Amino acid sequence: MMKKWKCTVCGYVHTGDEPPEKCPVCGADRSKFVELIEEAPQQDEPGPATPSETIAQQPLPTINTGFDRPENDFPETAQTVFQKYYAAATRLLVKYHAHPITVHIPSGVLPVAILFLVLSMLFQATGFETASFYNMIIVVLVMPKVLFTGYNDWKHRLNGKLTNLILTKMICGATVLLLGLFIVVWRWVDPMVALAYSQSRMTYLFLHLVILGAVVIAGYLGGTLVRFPGD
Image (cartoon, rainbow, N blue to C red; front, side, top):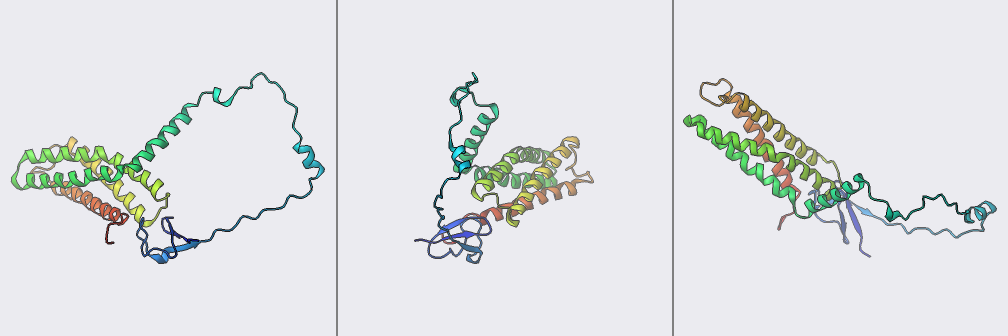
């Protein structure tokens, strides 16, 4: 009979004679695996029934209340219907890899936004600055979906195990959303913030670089959760 080994970091269960060299889910080494030992259920032999048990086993008289209806005749509540469709939707998001797809949008758009911002500062080109602002709006709009699909993958693929790696990814994601929203609002209130005579232009650029750092860290940690050929 094949043995089962459980990763103590993320809960992944491996079947085989020995634990794997590395967990394919969280990347933990084989020392983090413990063997799962299944105990055979003990069956108690039924003893003689006591008088109280004999009375309890006797059927109670049926009382016609006038409200007896088959269960299927009652319509499902709105909450039950919502839960059913929500569960189906979240399963589809996991099945079709919604998080890896959506996370590529801010990862690709944000560097372009920063590039346009730097070009606008170097060459005093307001067109590049406007393009940078619009790209940042796209990042902010897509981040809620990135965070939700990431949370959904964490709950379904990793069984909701909150490790330091997952916590760091959550902090990075929240940083991108909140700082991105702050930058968009700042630029909306002060359209001249990135121009040459603005005293806040370097702070404005620095916040963009902080967001880029958070995206890089989150992307690197996300890559450690994926098992690539040859790893």
